[in-house]
Image 1: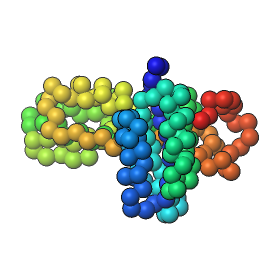
Image 2: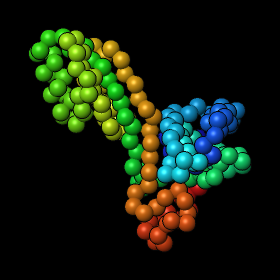
Image 3: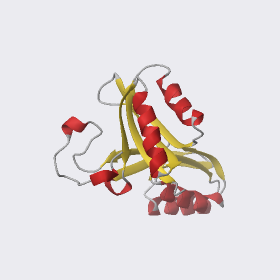
Length: 182
């Protein structure tokens, strides 16, 4: 099997229990959700779930079709990597008691365009927005200083250009997806 990381964008009713139903569908089929992010859209009655899962094309099609069968689901779209913008927020609290260590951490933060969002006598907290490679790279560099806490939001994603998950807002011919759209 040629499994790879796939990103699904799912529009659902913004109601209690919906996320649980979606997650149960994945676990019931034996899939691990690699990343999950949920939030309301511009319509307060609708939430958008971004799910990343390891699957081949046939498995992804099956999962997409199963999601569409749930009453609470309005739309499901597999986002092609070459036409998607993917980002996550990472917060990292690092031990930084001495000024020399603090300066080194600030230099690393600047290189990665991370923001220093909290300072105490013994620690610095950084916020980083990027893909998993950027997050892992800064984490590897900061490990030697002593990471006190680290939290990741999970990946969120949107299609580039005027494409949206809502088929009615699409411009014809902006991107030619051909048969790759699930």
